[in-house]
Amino acid sequence: MKKIIIAALLIFNIYNLYADENFIIDDTSIKILTDAGIDVSLEKKYTINSIIKRYLKDVRKILNELNEINMKINDEFKKEDINLDNIKKLIFEKKEKEADFDYTIMSCDLDILSLFSDNEIKRIKYYIIFRK
Image (cartoon, rainbow, N blue to C red; front, top):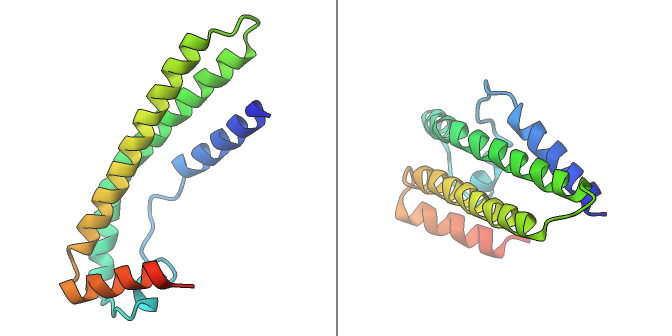
């Protein structure tokens, strides 16, 4: 069962690593903003797009590192004599990379939020908390 989960994670991570780099923010990408009642100009869309592209390299690097760690964990499970110390070390390494990923995504989100006024940020947060 663990091997199936690890394989699924590997496929998901590989798919993300090879996502199209030539993307542009469209209306479906910023649906949460429009649903919150925020009008997003074309200029803001391009600015949001450039912010995301700035973080994309780091995100891909972290996802690649997570993929490598998952492969190492999978290799450990394949061994006849499983070394739990190595698995524990790899799990801690993975958790650290996941924290780096979360931090990078949060930094990106904060840079995007800096484009909006305090009132708009309140509306976005209110929508996120109370949407159904």
